[in-house]
Length: 326
Image (cartoon, rainbow, N blue to C red; front, side, top):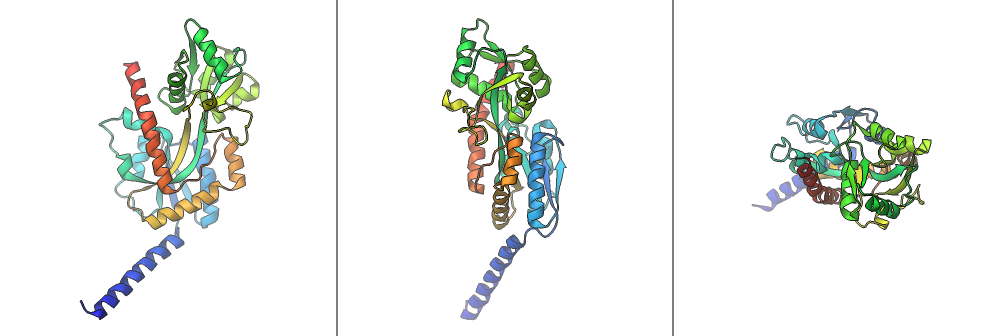
């Protein structure tokens, strides 16, 4: 190859790199779609729309949120991984914890979408740590006292949660395993029913996100004992983290922004930088806190590591729950 050809190829390579860079810097130049498994109006949906609104302002491009609830998150995952979707960053996937922590076990060997191959992580939107609370008349004012009370009870104590196999239920199972507390799950038709049962005293304990607990907290019918976060929450410094008493009980429902595999890395990095800028805004964090949601500043690689660690933690627990039901 002569020198002239090398120069021509070099110029072409530089031009290609410059084009890709410009594409990432200009992104987006048209509306973007977020596909979410969240039902319209629930807490993860509201969080998604807060972020979508702020990104719309930042990008000067509209974000359309498409709610595709059902089948444990599978409907949304299939929609976001559809073969006719362009791998250009204009259709994104706003996934939730249960899709990655529960669905692959529940659908083991039958999953129509390989989540690890179909999507690449963009960044963390927010986490909703699970709290433990008791009926106001339960004589326990701390996690330690609750464990002692449960283990003194001949038949143990019951706990409620949003639904069987959901993150709140799994948190209760993790707590039971780590603390050796004599507690067991009682299924009810949804979080509101479980909360009402706890308020009425029919069930003594509940595991749930703060947003779901809020009506009971406001009425005084339930009393918070702990939160399954790594450390105490910035806006609730007097609420102990459960792992202060029971190590390794850390659990949250989380929302992560994903992109179909094949979206250029420069676009992924641009998305990540803009997402982190938005969720760090004070007004966004203030609104998140009202929904029991907290941010975590993660790169795409760190977000991917987080997903793998969540799978490693929860898949065995989901299998144990499944075996117990058989």
